Image 1: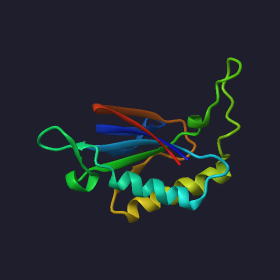
Image 2: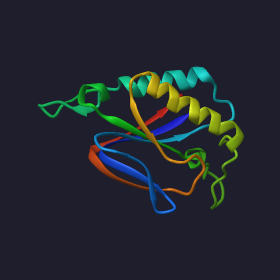
Image 3: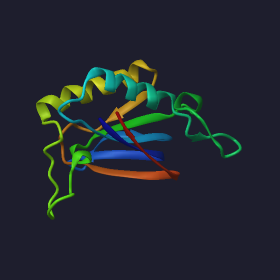
Length: 145
């Protein structure tokens, strides 16, 4: 499981020009799965994201979690996180889990974040999406488990 986490002051995802998920302060997560991902990896990732203290406190120090600021999470499926461009000029996506495997993992991950008290908005699994966000500082974190 791979997650690209971007700390944002706002983010939204559109499908067919319609907003399907929108948040204010929090994290925009691009989430990809591989064929060998299991529930323990999802649990670890949900715990990690819910507990990360990377939001700024009054002194500007990364010290606060989502729950401290009433933040939210926008979760967007992104199989291209498993793109391998090490050979040739076109990436291979063989390591990415196909939809029938990835979609239940995605749904479980979203549920786990909600169970940990996170306010969660989502995109539409597998849909062509447009994502718009405003970075909250230069904070982008790659998480993998």
